[in-house]
Image 1 (tube, one colour):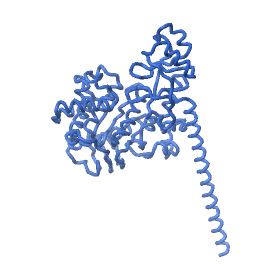
Image 2 (image 1 turned 180 degrees about the horizontal axis):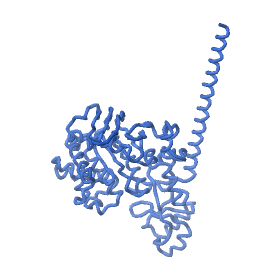
Image 3 (image 1 turned 60 degrees about the horizontal axis):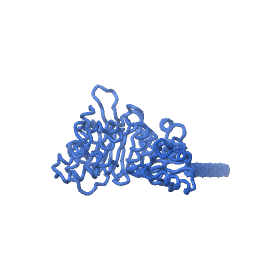
Amino acid sequence: MTETAESAASAASAASAARTAGGHASATGATIELDNLTKRYPGSRDPAVDSVHMEIKAGELVVFVGPSGCGKSTTLKMINRLIEPTGGRIRIGGEDVTDMDPVKLRRKVGYAIQSSGLFPHMTVAQNIALVPRMTGWSKSRIRSRVEEMLDLVGLDPGEFHGRYPRQLSGGQQQRVGVARALAADPPVLLMDEPFGAVDPITRDHLQDELIRLQHELHKTIVFVTHDFDEAIKLGDRIAVLRERSHIAQFDTPEAILTNPADDFVSGFVGAGAALKRLNLTRVRNVEITDFPTVTVDDPLQEIFNKLRGSGTNEILLLDKRGRPYKWLRRGDLMRAKGSLARAGTLVHDTVTRDATLRDALEAVLIDNTGRVAVTGRRGEFIGVVDMETLMNSVHEMLEADRLEAMEHQHELEEARAQQTHFEQEGDGGEKKA
């Protein structure tokens, strides 16, 4: 299927869903059951997807990860019948949808793809409004829905309403694509490598946004990626797939990291499993502390006085929207000579509450300040997480792993001792006989 066709399918899927949802109260997630799902292409000896059995719980975010060509995207697209299965059954919310009219099926399913799928000749508002407009909503209702969806994905409606996709960054396009996919409030959202075409920092922030949205909306999300670190960060459960979508392991990220099923899964986990576990803990789970701040509108003398009275050697300069802008030190202010234009060090990276501890650790190392600024959904400053907090969390995690390993070893030794005891008793009984 071409990218244009996928874009149209994505919009059509959302439009169909809007006819059902009608823009009313938010729908909850629905279970997805794949029973012996198979896809064979004419002329191919082996199936592309071979007898997949899987149950995905309502409100769960499940990630398909596997090598290129293993069938993960094909399996995803069979769920909403963008690719028609040649065998097996699909159930959504307990309803068998395998033989349902595909348009009716897509009333239950949202769809987001890597290139965002936005129509380039439409503005941001028109792209999001496409769904409600096709279903006959009033202009005032459409306008309200567009603003609601832009706000949901962290974009200022006043700023982005009239822009065209070409005027957006890759990350902003992806946010709008997700907003359109969710505009119809489907219980199921399929995402086919949606963040694969953006830079690493933008991808981290988009991942954080998806985690935040899932906390608010509780959709059932099936997400395809080739990046195992992304799978660990996002997934409630991960399906590691072999060729033809054979399931090597389907479990929680923690279980896969600590107990991979075989060498194939171990290959995906790779080296540094302990470090990867930092992806299992969020910034919101550790202490976020306050930090002295000033704004670009504050007089220079007032900034200097606040820094001198703060008890620290550094202060955070916020822009006019309250977003982290620069780290200022005493020496910077001494050299400022009445202007902050060239003073201080730019804030290179920030994290949200939904970022992982690994994201935070990388940001601390990049900024080289010993801390990272934590921001809200619109980039506003909330507080900081420092290196000491992160290292304490790492040590606690490693200690917990050590104790768990000791307990496991103790259980193994007890089991061996018990087995030896039973064998000795058996030998004694035979000798008496």
